[in-house]
Length: 115
Image (tube, rainbow, N blue to C red):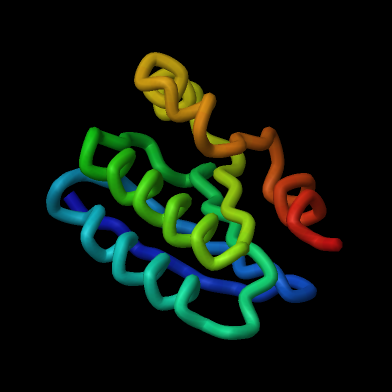
């Protein structure tokens, strides 16, 4: 199981896009990327674009919750965007949708983080 993670900046918002499966093997790479972008002084917000993530397990959820808390503690917004149906369903079952904002599109997520 592998995953690639890209990072791009859009008007002060950082969009992190993992691709593939996010599990115990690949989630640490996502944690490292999110920790890195959240440590930047010029971060206006972070969107985690999950449109290309076909599978997400509890380790991935843990990474996202930890990143959300880190962002919140720094006064930075973090939003999840475009989870595939199976991933979205897992978030709802686990109650993550009650903690982390989940948006239908990456563009809307990025817009929600801009002042």
